[in-house]
Amino acid sequence: MKAVPPQRHVAFSQTPKLRTIVLASRIAKDFDNEATGFPRTVMSGEETMGDQKSKAEQFRALHIPGKPFVLFNIWDAGSAKAVTAGGAKAVATGSWAVANANGFLDGEHISLGFVIDNLRRIVDGTCLPVSIDLESGYGDTPQLVGETIGKAIDAGAIGCNLEDSFPANSKLRETADQCGRIRFARQIADAANFHFFINVRTDVFLQASAECHNESMVVQAIERAHAYADAGADGLFAPGLANIGLIARLAKESALPLNIMVDDATPPICVLADHGVARVSHGPRPYVMTMKTLEEAARASGV
Image (cartoon, rainbow, N blue to C red; front, side, top):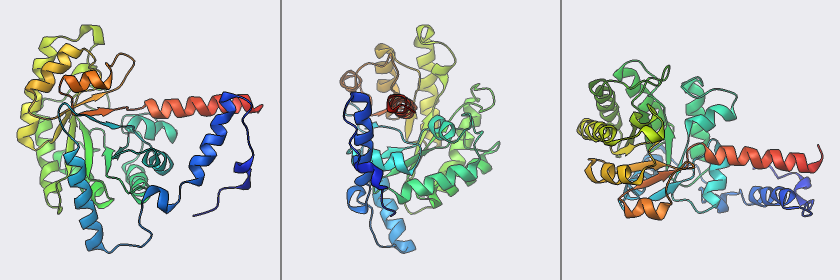
């Protein structure tokens, strides 16, 4: 690993904003192999698959309704190392952050090749299980979705998010259509020597503003969850849902462990835990926060 430039030793401590520079340099200094826990030796193919299987089992075991684990979503190898050093149990990319960090819009505008290369660098930079946001699966057909899953597995992922909406217009797919995509993804995943975690994102609650969310939408999400579970899904992600009563019903009646995304209206994690949530994701917020901190530090530096 290349040495961090000597400038990191300059102490900028006059203001809270400038202290972020010192914090960033300290994090950078800790990004060696001991800090991340990533092994120094190159593993054989058999050893790599065994490591991937172990991580997949570790990741799956984290999904406990009523005891949610938190994913502070990342977008590249550097952010993965930071979150790893912060004590995370697993890392997961967020497609919005990955796209924006590289000058693209979300919605599969960034190429699959770049997404997989980015994943490979992330896997190489952390000892933790890595789940990847694959949006709608980068394919019009179930077969193409299966190929995408295979590429993610080959790059070291132990799980993914798979949306049930069209990337072009965000409209919901028919349940049967999405089940076909999940089913083929599961077939490809099962060819690996471990259980790949397919977290299906339902965009039911992104079809209307939060104040319009109601019981009928929850029923629709529950029906989809049962169908997705039968097709081979392992988890249900419901971004946009913040009403704790509706969250509680979905968590109780879903056939899959429930994943909720943090936004300004989301109840505290302890409340989500009390109502059966199994996983909490921060989505694009870590990236937005990091960029804001960088902007403020740059402004305070006198650039």
